[in-house]
Image 1: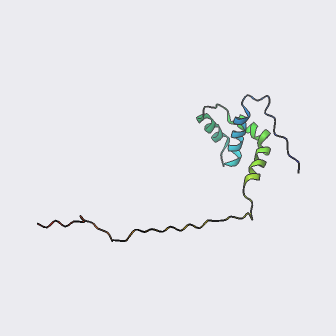
Image 2: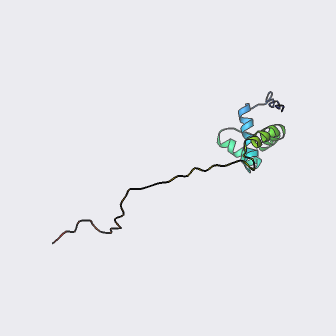
Image 3: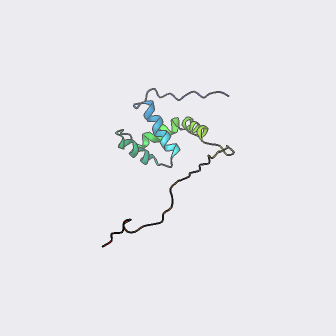
Length: 104
């Protein structure tokens, strides 16, 4: 199996971490380009939705392949742990009033 070369982020205005995070958000979650733009803007990164679209076209295939490799496949085995909880608390019933009766 041959490894695909990582995409070259050289010549882009933003660092590779920001570009890959924006494309990762777009492909992993059902978000529109404008939603990705708003998420990045909330973190102080100003990009347009058109920039995110161009990044998705250029770097999207390699990031989508990485996401696909990490997702569980059909037929993967899932093991569940069994948990048993025991309690030593004695059931005394419910009491709505004071527990001590005041004789008058």
